[in-house]
Image (cartoon, helix red, strand yellow):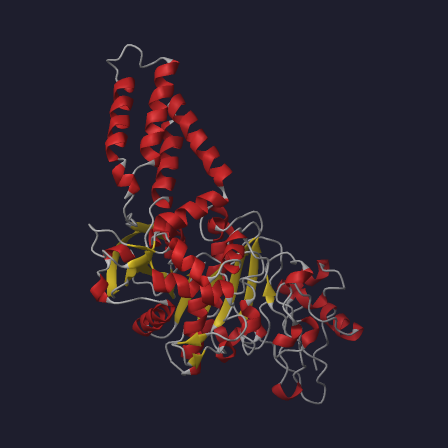
Length: 535
């Protein structure tokens, strides 16, 4: 409403800018005229009202060919619509449901995320509605309703679906999957990827976390909750206004935003149209905000940030059912964090691994991206070049046709920061099992052919990481301690989950560290370097 009230002033600024830049104006090329015009342009841009943007995705590239993409609404509900980015291809790629954050911005903030995942996945997204546009008679919407929506969408998509939760949805997505797992729902997803999610806000609390923990829920209700004004379909509905959320985001990085606007001013003065257009495109998206229902906002503040109910194993669904994350046994888990994330601090997302205590370690993966903040976890160049390929590899490895291969050994990956070496549109090749020797000489096993020779260059202290995969008869199988797959550099010890919270041997199961496989005996290491004689 405030921006609408400035409409007359903004129109005057636009008029003055046009006059100053007019080719018929004899002073249009002078420095004072260009500076004044740039100032009027900047004022016009920063006070402009931004409605809900469009995704505008019309094509993608598959196997080096351009493929048309059509947006279609698969299912409508009062506060959300399930949107499908339908590709004009016969390829059957993994189904991926992206759960967009309901935290003030529209789902279009994930446009880059969708574009990046489209070549290798059949993508769906939760397109949340602005609460200001939902009439009061349509009813309420809270955190429990959010969980219901996720379960319903997974039921619609059916089995063999993968879920990606970006930021805020991490908690309700985990809760939904825990409930589905406990109910033995066949539509429980094959995997979930949590990105920059506040699973346990006690770990490295950021400014938003501290704000929530230092004020009562009554303070939030009296301070930030307002009624939708007349003129909107949702008039009189109690909401948390989107502009307050935007103000909070901007205030956290006020200096950077001011610097960006000053650069935009310089671009306008210099006539650098390309840079100015990129700036406008970003802020047109960033400044487009939506209102949240008051009940959803307050319940999220209390459950996630004040009580940390899910992390403590105390989260209740509909007030009478405990959310048991230990029931998640078949949905693989990947967590992604950004080193510079100032909204969901380091350690908050990886805490999910402790909660899934009955999930095999071979089905857990964590990755920390160096040099990115919150936004960079799901968008930008490092997301496209490094994070997204890892997620695609993780999803492909947990497709039914590949999962059997992974179920009997840890999914270990070198923490070198490089993208996984898999084809863009291919599946990761399972290692070929080797034939076992006769029972009378179980030690004489057939070694892996020379193509697995990288062991030659590997120091003896890391034999397990590069050793050939040898499969023995079931009766003779050695016991191997499983280590969680960690792609990132070791995190500080303060953020290591407590060993007592897992069902695995506590010695080396900490999910935050890149772990080396247990050191084998000297004879075992020697057998991997020297092929055994055939029996």
